[in-house]
Image (cartoon, rainbow, N blue to C red; front, top):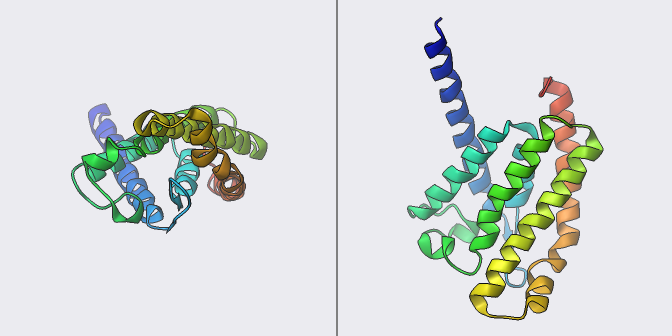
Length: 182
Protein backbone atom coordinates (compact mmCIF):
# COMPACT_ATOMS: atom_id res chain seq x y z
CA UNK A 1 0.00 0.00 0.00
CA UNK A 2 1.14 3.50 -0.71
CA UNK A 3 1.25 6.35 1.79
CA UNK A 4 -1.95 8.00 0.56
CA UNK A 5 -3.91 4.75 1.01
CA UNK A 6 -2.54 4.33 4.53
CA UNK A 7 -3.43 7.93 5.36
CA UNK A 8 -6.98 7.50 4.02
CA UNK A 9 -7.40 4.32 6.06
CA UNK A 10 -6.11 6.06 9.19
CA UNK A 11 -8.47 9.00 8.60
CA UNK A 12 -11.38 6.62 8.05
CA UNK A 13 -10.52 4.76 11.25
CA UNK A 14 -10.38 8.06 13.16
CA UNK A 15 -13.76 9.08 11.73
CA UNK A 16 -15.36 5.74 12.60
CA UNK A 17 -14.00 5.78 16.16
CA UNK A 18 -15.10 9.40 16.61
CA UNK A 19 -18.60 8.51 15.39
CA UNK A 20 -18.75 5.53 17.76
CA UNK A 21 -17.65 7.69 20.68
CA UNK A 22 -20.18 10.40 19.73
CA UNK A 23 -22.95 7.78 19.82
CA UNK A 24 -21.59 6.50 23.13
CA UNK A 25 -21.74 10.06 24.49
CA UNK A 26 -25.30 10.53 23.20
CA UNK A 27 -26.44 7.30 24.88
CA UNK A 28 -24.84 8.25 28.20
CA UNK A 29 -26.47 11.72 27.95
CA UNK A 30 -29.83 9.99 28.29
CA UNK A 31 -28.84 8.68 31.71
CA UNK A 32 -30.07 11.78 33.46
CA UNK A 33 -31.17 12.61 36.99
CA UNK A 34 -32.64 16.08 37.60
CA UNK A 35 -30.29 17.86 39.97
CA UNK A 36 -30.51 21.61 40.44
CA UNK A 37 -29.73 23.86 37.51
CA UNK A 38 -27.99 21.16 35.48
CA UNK A 39 -29.00 17.49 35.42
CA UNK A 40 -26.62 14.81 36.64
CA UNK A 41 -25.85 12.79 33.51
CA UNK A 42 -23.62 9.97 32.39
CA UNK A 43 -22.04 12.20 29.74
CA UNK A 44 -18.95 13.10 31.71
CA UNK A 45 -18.41 9.46 32.63
CA UNK A 46 -18.39 8.55 28.94
CA UNK A 47 -16.33 11.64 28.16
CA UNK A 48 -13.66 10.79 30.71
CA UNK A 49 -13.49 7.20 29.58
CA UNK A 50 -12.94 7.82 25.90
CA UNK A 51 -10.68 10.81 26.53
CA UNK A 52 -8.53 8.49 28.65
CA UNK A 53 -8.24 5.65 26.14
CA UNK A 54 -8.28 7.35 22.74
CA UNK A 55 -5.91 9.66 20.95
CA UNK A 56 -6.73 13.38 21.39
CA UNK A 57 -7.74 13.80 17.74
CA UNK A 58 -10.34 11.05 18.07
CA UNK A 59 -11.77 12.38 21.34
CA UNK A 60 -11.93 15.95 20.06
CA UNK A 61 -13.57 14.81 16.81
CA UNK A 62 -16.12 12.78 18.78
CA UNK A 63 -17.15 15.75 20.91
CA UNK A 64 -17.24 18.09 17.89
CA UNK A 65 -19.44 15.58 16.04
CA UNK A 66 -21.68 15.17 19.10
CA UNK A 67 -22.16 18.95 19.33
CA UNK A 68 -22.82 19.14 15.58
CA UNK A 69 -25.43 16.36 15.76
CA UNK A 70 -27.18 18.21 18.56
CA UNK A 71 -26.94 21.52 16.69
CA UNK A 72 -28.72 20.12 13.63
CA UNK A 73 -31.57 18.86 15.79
CA UNK A 74 -30.80 15.26 16.65
CA UNK A 75 -31.88 14.63 20.26
CA UNK A 76 -28.44 13.69 21.57
CA UNK A 77 -28.14 16.05 24.54
CA UNK A 78 -29.39 15.30 28.06
CA UNK A 79 -33.07 14.33 28.24
CA UNK A 80 -33.27 14.13 24.44
CA UNK A 81 -32.81 17.86 23.98
CA UNK A 82 -31.30 19.30 20.80
CA UNK A 83 -30.88 22.37 18.69
CA UNK A 84 -29.07 25.66 18.69
CA UNK A 85 -31.18 26.82 21.62
CA UNK A 86 -29.31 24.30 23.79
CA UNK A 87 -25.90 25.19 22.35
CA UNK A 88 -26.49 28.89 22.91
CA UNK A 89 -28.48 28.70 26.13
CA UNK A 90 -27.56 28.90 29.81
CA UNK A 91 -26.15 25.36 29.93
CA UNK A 92 -24.06 25.71 26.76
CA UNK A 93 -20.84 26.17 28.71
CA UNK A 94 -21.14 22.68 30.16
CA UNK A 95 -21.37 21.22 26.64
CA UNK A 96 -18.55 23.31 25.18
CA UNK A 97 -16.55 22.49 28.30
CA UNK A 98 -16.45 18.93 26.94
CA UNK A 99 -13.94 20.15 24.35
CA UNK A 100 -11.69 21.50 27.12
CA UNK A 101 -12.05 18.17 28.93
CA UNK A 102 -10.92 16.00 26.03
CA UNK A 103 -8.12 18.34 24.97
CA UNK A 104 -6.66 18.40 28.48
CA UNK A 105 -7.04 14.69 29.21
CA UNK A 106 -5.95 13.61 25.74
CA UNK A 107 -2.83 15.74 25.73
CA UNK A 108 -1.72 14.39 29.11
CA UNK A 109 -2.74 10.73 28.78
CA UNK A 110 -0.68 10.05 25.66
CA UNK A 111 2.46 10.73 27.72
CA UNK A 112 1.42 9.87 31.27
CA UNK A 113 -0.93 6.96 31.84
CA UNK A 114 -0.33 5.61 35.32
CA UNK A 115 -3.54 5.21 37.32
CA UNK A 116 -2.93 8.27 39.50
CA UNK A 117 -2.11 10.42 36.46
CA UNK A 118 -5.36 9.33 34.80
CA UNK A 119 -7.26 10.17 37.98
CA UNK A 120 -5.59 13.55 38.48
CA UNK A 121 -5.98 14.82 34.93
CA UNK A 122 -9.61 13.65 34.79
CA UNK A 123 -10.37 15.40 38.07
CA UNK A 124 -8.76 18.63 36.87
CA UNK A 125 -10.63 18.35 33.55
CA UNK A 126 -13.94 17.66 35.31
CA UNK A 127 -13.55 20.68 37.58
CA UNK A 128 -12.50 22.82 34.59
CA UNK A 129 -15.49 21.69 32.56
CA UNK A 130 -17.82 22.48 35.46
CA UNK A 131 -16.18 25.88 35.91
CA UNK A 132 -16.62 26.76 32.23
CA UNK A 133 -20.27 25.72 32.41
CA UNK A 134 -20.84 27.66 35.62
CA UNK A 135 -19.31 30.87 34.27
CA UNK A 136 -21.44 30.74 31.12
CA UNK A 137 -24.51 29.96 33.23
CA UNK A 138 -23.84 32.91 35.58
CA UNK A 139 -23.34 35.30 32.65
CA UNK A 140 -26.45 34.05 30.86
CA UNK A 141 -28.80 34.08 33.86
CA UNK A 142 -27.26 37.15 35.54
CA UNK A 143 -26.83 35.57 38.95
CA UNK A 144 -24.02 36.24 41.40
CA UNK A 145 -21.01 34.06 40.65
CA UNK A 146 -21.06 32.70 44.21
CA UNK A 147 -24.58 31.39 43.71
CA UNK A 148 -23.69 29.93 40.33
CA UNK A 149 -20.51 28.30 41.68
CA UNK A 150 -22.46 26.52 44.37
CA UNK A 151 -25.45 25.50 42.24
CA UNK A 152 -23.54 24.65 39.07
CA UNK A 153 -20.20 23.37 40.31
CA UNK A 154 -19.66 22.71 44.01
CA UNK A 155 -22.62 20.34 44.35
CA UNK A 156 -21.30 18.30 41.42
CA UNK A 157 -17.76 17.80 42.78
CA UNK A 158 -18.60 14.65 44.83
CA UNK A 159 -20.30 13.13 41.78
CA UNK A 160 -17.33 14.11 39.62
CA UNK A 161 -14.98 12.33 42.03
CA UNK A 162 -17.05 9.14 41.80
CA UNK A 163 -17.03 9.35 37.99
CA UNK A 164 -13.26 9.94 37.98
CA UNK A 165 -12.73 6.86 40.14
CA UNK A 166 -14.83 4.74 37.76
CA UNK A 167 -13.03 6.19 34.71
CA UNK A 168 -9.64 5.56 36.32
CA UNK A 169 -10.40 1.92 37.12
CA UNK A 170 -11.89 1.14 33.71
CA UNK A 171 -9.36 3.14 31.65
CA UNK A 172 -6.38 1.65 33.49
CA UNK A 173 -7.64 -1.86 32.78
CA UNK A 174 -8.32 -1.09 29.10
CA UNK A 175 -4.92 0.57 28.64
CA UNK A 176 -3.13 -2.42 30.19
CA UNK A 177 -5.25 -5.05 28.45
CA UNK A 178 -4.96 -3.61 24.96
CA UNK A 179 -1.52 -2.02 25.22
CA UNK A 180 -2.83 1.42 24.37
CA UNK A 181 -0.17 4.18 24.21
CA UNK A 182 2.77 1.76 23.93
